[in-house]
Image 1: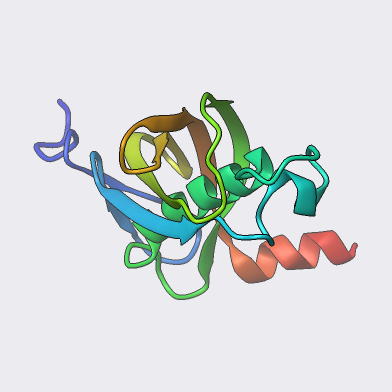
Image 2: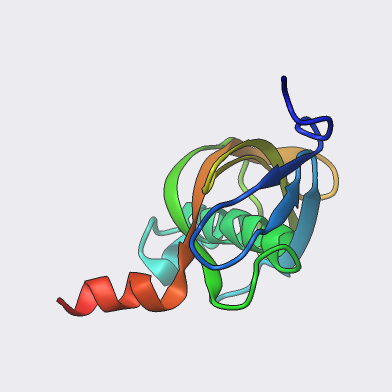
Length: 144
């Protein structure tokens, strides 16, 4: 018999404490296109338009923001997969908004829908997976 709240709440057994994450929870973050986040500046092209790697970073930041009040002390999340479409160019001065929505929870694995827009149109969308980790254990494994 499924848990009565299984469609709304999932419990992680990540080794620290129970953490609750609500399906459908969203977060939105924004940035303004400037000379530091253009394709020309980051080396992903030679035009002064919002760089695809910067759009991806903004989308991941939105996914992290979704989890900002949901993780227990000592927990973090790490990106494990991302697939995006960048469908429209945005010039310097444009405000970009990225939204991440939790669509699936399977233990420590969280899946997100991603959307980026410039206020008038969608400029990108995608799917993202993040894994809940114990921060100390994760970093300790890297030192071995």
